[in-house]
Image (cartoon, rainbow, N blue to C red; front, side):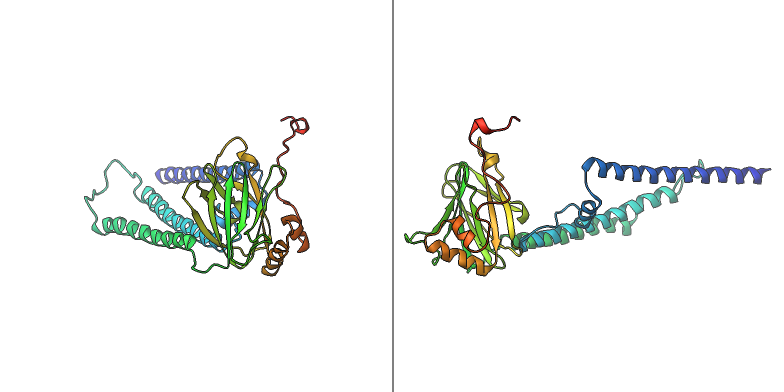
Length: 308
C-alpha cells in the first residue's frame, strides 16, 4: 500500500510538472504572437531584427558596419553570461530544493567560486571596454588626405552644402554650393567608395546633421565650434537627411537629401556645376532625378494645407 501510494504521488507530481511546462510554453507562444501583432511587423522584419538583435542592418557606410559588429558581439556576450547565470540559478533551485525539515550542510565560503565571480566579470568588462574603445576610435578617425571635403552649414530652417575641394570652384571662383529654400529641398551629392570629410557649422542655434541610413548623427554648433567626421559610403542611392536637434518652429521640416553616386558621376556633376549649371541641372545631366525624391518641401501656403 505504501509503495502504491508513493507511485501515485510521483505520477501526480510529474503530471503537475508537465502541466506547468505546457503552460509556460503556451504563454511564450502567446507572448511572441502578441508582440508581432501589436508591433505590426512581418515575419521577415522580425527575422531581420533577431539577426541584428535590434540593430538596423541597412547601414551604408564603413562606420555603420563596424558599429553593427560591435553591437552583435556585445549582445552575444550578454546572452552567454545570461544563460550561464540562469543555468546556475535553475541548477541551485533543483539541486538544493527542500527535501525535508533538515537543513542542508551550510558552507561559509568557497574560494574558487568567489574568485570566479570576482575575476570573470572584470575580464568581461575589460574585453567589452577594449572593443568599444577601438570602435569609437575608428568611428571618429579622420585621415590626413580625404578624397572629398564638404562643408555643412545649418541655419533656421534649412541647409547649405559647400564643396570645398580646391578644384570644386564655380565660374565666379567661389566654392560650389547648394542652398535650400522653403520651396527647395537641398540635395547633397557625394561619391561612393571615397573617403568624405564633413565639416559642420551653424549660423544661429544648435542643429544636428542626421542621415538615418548612415546610423550616425553629429551636432552642428554655432560660433567657433566646428564638428567634423569622415565617412565612406558603399551603396548608391537617395537617402533622406534631417535635423535631429529641436531648433525652432520649423525644425520638423528641416530636411535634405543625400544622393550617393558613382565616383565617375560625381566628377561629372562637379564639372557641370563648374560650367554654371544649377544643382538640379547638373543632376539631370548625369541621369539623376533633379530634385529630392525621399522628402518634399513644406507647403507654406496655409490655404492649401489639409486639415490635421
